[in-house]
Image 1 (tube, one colour):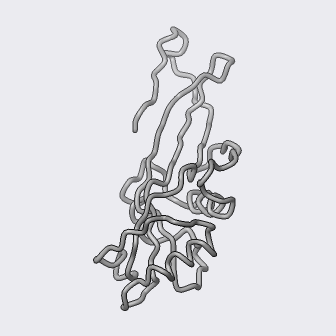
Image 2 (cartoon, rainbow, N blue to C red):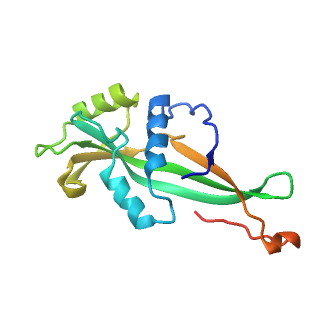
Length: 169
């Protein structure tokens, strides 16, 4: 997304560490916009938070996200569009392996690479997208999100005080 980003606030207790938050923001910077849901879904399935040059035996993927859009005043009679994207569910994948996922190894990867502990991993029978490997899923830590803000163009309705509001989610 090309809109200005808000500064990241400190993560909540039990939330993502700086490395995970930075990886999420980098991942988002290359993702198709929310207006392209099919392309965005394919991106989620193909590209991990580890980055395109990842070489380890495990990868971390975004399984589910929420996208909230709203509109707020800029304090000068204009409007600002606000889009907040939150990771809801993540998957740790033993990359391109045929053998079952070892939960202890997955937990060690999450702790060492991302600083995530005690995530209550749920082992799934089906492999990740296109036989990417065995997977376990878990709820994303609170605070794994990013907010974009951008000025909205004035509309004729704005002159009468009847401007449209953007809301979904």
